[in-house]
Amino acid sequence: MRRSLDALSVFSTDDLADYDVISDGPRSLESSIADLGQAPLRSAGSEPAPLPSAREKFDTVALTAEDIQAYVRRSLGSSASGRGDEARTWRVYVDGVFGPLTPRRRDVLQLRQAKLCFPSVHLLVGVFPEDVCEAHNASTDFPHADRCEVVRHCRWVDEVVPDAPWTLHEKFLRARHIDYVAIDEGTSIDPDCDRERLKGYDLVKSLRKAVPTRRTNMSTPMPRAHDPFRKASKPRAEPEPEAKQAEGGTVKKAPVSLTQEAAADPSADLKDALETPFEEPPEPTPFEEPRVDEFGTGHGV
Image 1 (tube, rainbow, N blue to C red):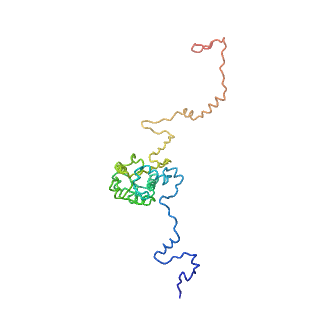
Image 2 (spheres, rainbow, N blue to C red):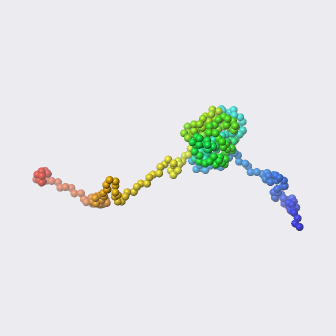
Image 3 (tube, rainbow, N blue to C red):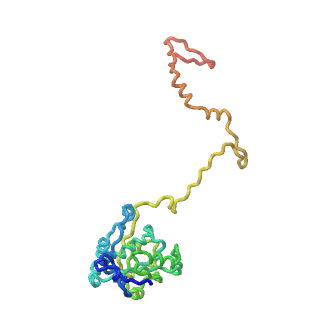
């Protein structure tokens, strides 16, 4: 009969010192992991370093958290002094259509600035529903559920607001406990931004609840292959070797003599002219009798 052995019957006290033994109990695994110690957690603002090529291409990639927060403090001025403890977590809101998150669309880089505008930020991102986009002629690349899911997987986002209003109002700000709204610089003069949407941003600015995010500019122009405004050049028509029947008559070929002269090598004539010495005409003597031509006029002296 096989006898069951426990850990103490197999190992001595000295042997057990070299092993990590998980004790019995409902939280034995968690307790053992805690005893082994945990790796230091990364802070909320830590991130992998951008590529050198990305720093050259997108001007806001190189902005650090300190740069962004100093810029926000300067823009808020005295209004930031009476807003409470600096250690608190601020609820910052950003809205948009949000298709594919790419640096060219400036979405991800704006979300990064919104997340880092204060030392501690809870970032809410509002995604416009499809019916709202259709009512304001805003094109969408993906369905509403897909766009919300893409935003949810962004590392900077803490909360997704799927029913974002097109025009911000005080009732929405109070219901979501929003402290600030991040607005991209130049939005008020952007022709692509709807006027109704700008009314909500103007309200936010009047309530001193707006924080600016710097617009991302690309230093490298878009390749020609992806330029939507470049028209494809038409292929040049090759000349026909033979004459074709034209409308209202026929096109005749050039005379054979002209064709042969055009086909002749002009350099041969030039070569002959260079090799042939130039002969000066003989000078007439002072007492030379005038010669008479067939018309009865003379020439000479």
